[in-house]
Image (cartoon, rainbow, N blue to C red; front, side, top):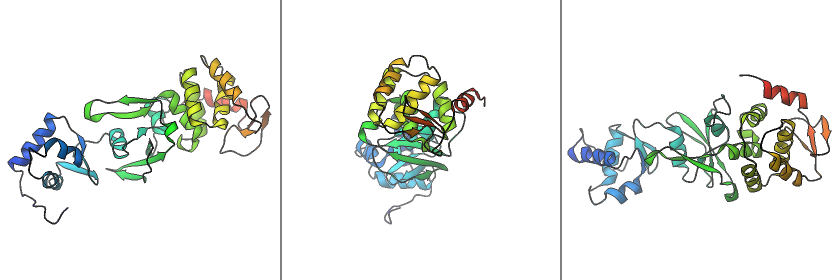
Length: 266
């Protein structure tokens, strides 16, 4: 709080009028700059207004220059808002799309800009910076001031195979891949975007093993990406198991184990 800020004991008329203006614009979450742009001619000192309302616990400070109403607690909106270019992704998106019943301990945000992981109002956020080419396959959720981005189902699956450490566990990811209804052309587009041959081979092999409907074109594409290097099917596992020459993969999770994972009920 600035030393020169005057804190009133009670709500005054200007503070009441300010809150009514937020209602008029349907603003639940906002930056200080945004408020100044909208209201600078209507209110004398936006900074002082905000400090008073934060002090009275009518507004909450999310981080420097970013605020919301005290009762606003949509973690997805808040996470994308504080990351500027962010989208709900990885394990959080798997859960949002109904592809896992496991709840992550963090809200995973994919972003172009580096940002330190942090907790806001008791929710932990993990920010995953990626190359611009990987920012694709986004859906808009929510309305008006509560909009946020989330990766679509295919991009969520591809992202999780690209960075499986953010997926909630490889068995859970295999199960999600089996459950998801996937579009071949989207899968090809997103695999091209991530440019991860090992991940593409793993998904192609699984699509063929599980006889995924509608993915013949993707399987064909994945086979075209195969290189000479062998990769284990589970990148976090040990280097052993059956060699599959056609896919240049080593099955440190056996075919039977994969099928058993897919058939396992929660």
